[in-house]
Image (cartoon, rainbow, N blue to C red; front, side):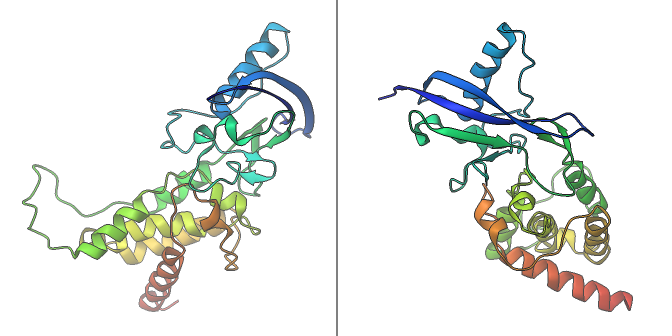
Length: 252
């Protein structure tokens, strides 16, 4: 059964290029069945009625698919609940009278745009460096035209579940995008359709990752713990193997 709770929110407020600060707000009479983002909606409605600028936060599907809604809740990505995005976090996880700190993802490669919104376009630029896949257009081929082992198909599908939320970057002590990049490399490297460009793909994506200021992996595995889709760190090992083989082929 749902109930009403009251919370004290310490929310990070910041404009791009300016210094930020925490500001305190009261969230009163919040239904425990409400999602975290719905709670922020309620608080923003009250702020708007008072003539106070509402809290800026990013969201889209609110179904745990788009990866837009990332923030740190009490210092943890998405509130640090297993395989949960911020929009899937419900207020029943909090206690009446609790103080909750909310701030944007912290990473060198994720500059703050406003309040809880960060610029995660670096992840899109890494994907763009992956280039294309040599697949003929037109009608779909017969399913058995290109045989794919079941375990490889399943591993590729698991890697493709990455939603690019950036939680792995924010959770990593070095701000690395290794788990994200590894997932994007793996989903193609495991399938025969992705083999023609696999060498250039991994070289370009790793180079872009370094260029954008993402850190290096130091095997802390915080990324896998924070990932709302459960992307396995085995993908990082695959990325390293792919990169070493590509480097050997290029003589670098």
